[in-house]
Image 1 (cartoon, rainbow, N blue to C red):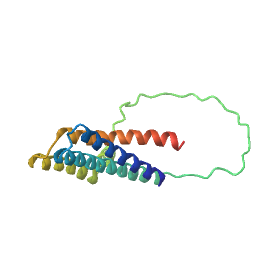
Image 2: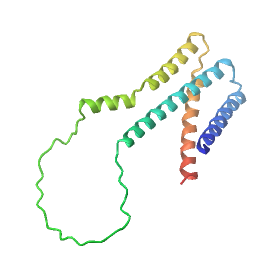
Image 3: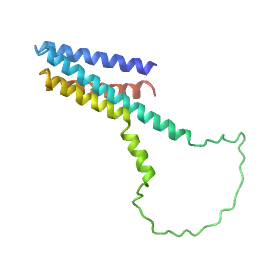
Image 4: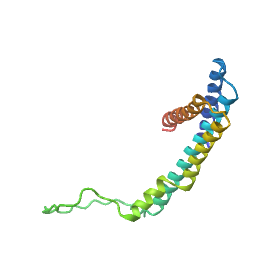
Length: 162
């Protein structure tokens, strides 16, 4: 819960700072504001859906693993190790995934929620463009602010929760 609160604080602070910077340079108008907010929230939706997709895949793969409890007592035994002769055989080093693995990787990177998030990003861009409200500077800076927010949050988590 503390990490979520930290991300929200960083997100709101950078959003507010960016809007103040636009206002200071007298370029804050309705088109810049709408472009900025559509860019930042649609990209936030992309990041959240990617996170949830990866989290689901990790938990799914981790549930398939079998963990064994370590033994309660440790005993030392000496074993006589005989040298073994190992023969190496030529093997296809490409390790090409089979069809089932390709489908799993495809579903990992292109889940339905992710595609929907990208559609919302493009639809927001096209809506703003069609109604002459698109400010490319505002849209790109909205996406950039969120990327900066994620980097700051990553450094915060790395330093605060060691």
